[in-house]
Length: 139
Image (cartoon, rainbow, N blue to C red):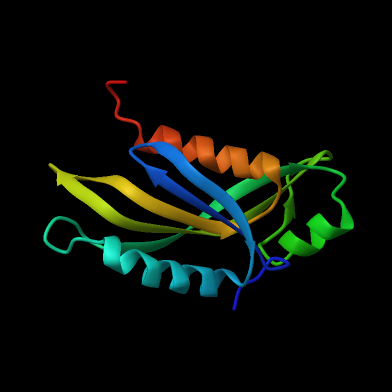
C-alpha cells in the first residue's frame, strides 16, 4: 500500500478543464479502487474504453523541506538536484472512462487523476500539465 500521510489529490477533468479538485485523507490505492466503483455507472462500454494507468511524475521542490513534507515524499526516490532543489517521482493514476480514438491517438474526454498530495504548488503544476496535455492543438 502506498501512502503519503494518506493525503491524496483527486482531480476530475472533463474536456480539458478541471471540474473538481479535492484532497482526501485515505490510502491512494483505496481511493483508486473506490473511484472505479463510482465511475462504473457513468461508463458506456459501447462508446469508450475504461482505462486505469499508473505513471510516475517528477516533482521538483525547493529546499529546505519541512519535516512533514520530507516524511511524505522521502519514499518516492527523493534525490538532490542542486544545492537548492530536490526531486521525487510520485505515482500518478489516470482513470479514463470517456475517451475515443482519433487515428492512432487516444483522446480522453472525461477522466480522473489520482496522486499523492504534496503541496498546493505541485497540485497546480499537475492541473496545468493535464490541461496542456488534453487541450486540442487547434486552441
